[in-house]
Image (cartoon, rainbow, N blue to C red):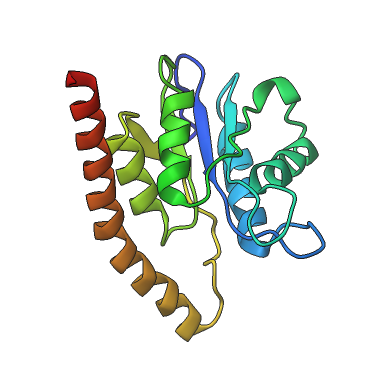
Length: 177
């Protein structure tokens, strides 16, 4: 990818992944943050939006990502935590709400297998977004595990699409009432 500079602040939404029992990031989570940080250095005044609440183990995915971003010399002022998301759908909705009125481009950062669903959900939530280059390494090293995640996404994408449309319909009905 060429070294492109974009006018205005860039927002980079980093979708969460598992936190280990000891509170450290999983390999997938760490790689997503590394990809976001590598992309962010190409843009002045990048705003990082790590998203993800507390999963099986605390602290929140967003907090763990913020700590990793500090390791890349990203200041607190450039990090906007979104800790309410419990899954990809709720994270996308919450981030779109947080970024409403943001004037610069929005990029979604996740693993390659997960990125199409993240982009679809952000866009359906009213947040025009583009893809941040995904981590260079696949999220799963084993052949079977890699296909498990791909097949899981193949099922989750249409389900989340329908859930988002239903959510938008309900919001429209509530506004018109």
